[in-house]
Amino acid sequence: MYMKHLLLLLISLSFTWVNGQTPAFPGAEGHGRYVTGGRGGEVYHVTSLNDNMSEQGTLRWALNQPSPKTILFKVSGTILLSSPLKINKGNVTIAGQSAPGDGICIGNHPVSVNANNVIVRYLRFRMGDGDLANADGSDAFGSRDYSDVIIDHCSISWSTDECASFYGMTNFTMQWCLISESLRLSGHSKGPHGYGGIWGGKNATFHHNLMAHHDSRTPRFGPAVSTQTEENVDYRNNVIYNWGGNGAYGGEAMNINIVNNFYKPGPATPNGAKRGRILAYDKKIDLSAGDGFYPINNQWGKLYVSGNVVDNSTSSGSDITHCNNATNNNWPYGIYNQIHSRYSISAAEKEQMKRAIPYEKGWVTTHSAINAYEKVLEHAGASLARDDHDSRIIEETRTGTAQFKGLSEHNGKSTETVDGVTINWKSVGYPHWGIIDSHYDIRPADAPVDWTPWPILNSAEARDDSDKDGMPDAWELAKGLDPNDPLDGKQATLDAEYTNLEMYLNSLVATITSDQYEGGVGGTTSLAPQTAAKISMHPNPATKQLTIAGHAPMRSITIYNQSGIDCQSQAANGQTTSALELTKLSPGIYFIRVNYENGATHTEKIIKR
Image 1 (cartoon, rainbow, N blue to C red):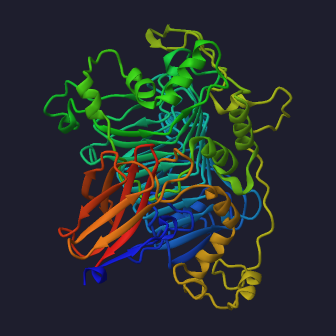
Image 2 (cartoon, rainbow, N blue to C red):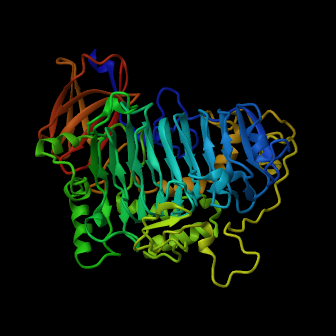
Image 3 (cartoon, rainbow, N blue to C red):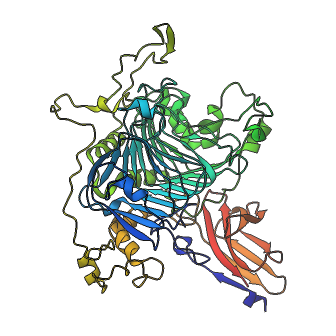
């Protein structure tokens, strides 16, 4: 009978892992959630804060060892690099939460992911501008044109270009990161910078991140040549504070969800319409046939925009109206009004930019924008042991303030000729509070002689680990494992999905993982109203149709396969019931998403046999 061929499993997608895939760790979400990293591989311990490839126990040495591997830390503190650090060997997990004490910071030079299948958690990347000869125009942490990467709970600051750029990525997630204080007049050869990041990719997710104190690119949605015709980005529940200059812009020919983000203007944010900026959308024009981006020449992308909030608490006068307008009407005030005046855009073109239903997001637990603001301030960054820098950034974001500003002698200047060379500093009206020029600009007035911008990270005594499998002896004994068996960390005897070593590493941050997603909704796209309206599904054996009954007027219904591909869509036209024809669907697992007229969504899983 038809009833036997259509088994409905009404299960919250927050807890559904399909096709036998295991998340990288509990709380891993988005398009990079199934990265395996170093699962089941060898364990290497970082025991020294030195930076020496030939010295066993350094991070650089550990990264150069064969993969798959998991890198753990038996020391806390700051690793001051002597040269850029590249993660060139994939199939690796770098577990910063394993450090005893206050955790790990990596400084002085940029760090990049140049490999596939990489997990990075609970680390700090604070580059600085102390060695511009070797780090001119560098990102503190970034990657481009790689796949299967997830960055979780990292703190990133003090870049001379962008703090955190990840684009051209495939199956990527950056989540719960704190990205702050890029350096504006730091000696970049191209002039003033101070940028947050370039973000994009083919199935790339950016959620629950904080960007604070950047002069521009918060973020710059950027296609890469490698992914320009397949860009699919989900951007939700991020908090953006104190943007200057252009703020968020770009998105040329990209497909982007912009959902439930929280924007808070600060002392560096311009007055006027930019106060309500969600995105200054753009396209590439007038490209020659030989240009690498010619395939997307003169093409707008499509955006799904919903539930974003622009906070008005730091504004006054007419700026309050700009914030309120953008909150109440995301599209006209946060998007359309931000597009450059050089474009003459018809009403029809505007409608073509607008996506009625969201793109596949890779299943992210979603909060309202206001709830996301609180969650991000509580948990973003290397929050297992927050350092003084992150604590200050959080407090400044919460209070709408900034303690420091740029101290470069070139602030206030336009052009200047030095040794016959004319330089455009573009700095009339600067400095602005929160936008610094060097990491040394944050030096307190009463700082001691031996002060350093890198926060002090105290180390604790590493726990005994007799067999060096990464799991402390006491923990192994408590779990019934053998502290003298070096192989049981690779086994999965405590859980069907994770190795015993992963179980230990996950336990170190279990409270944060649980708390950060509390109050969110899995498998939904917009929380307006706060909870998603549910649906009822009724198969009809005679007609081989599935009737969807909503609890409110429905706008549309879409069926996706496990890869997130849209297999079937139909308009519901405000009705509360709608019939789906399923005869063309092959046997397998599908997800049915209902989009309601009031902005709420709900998704259920079905198995067609």
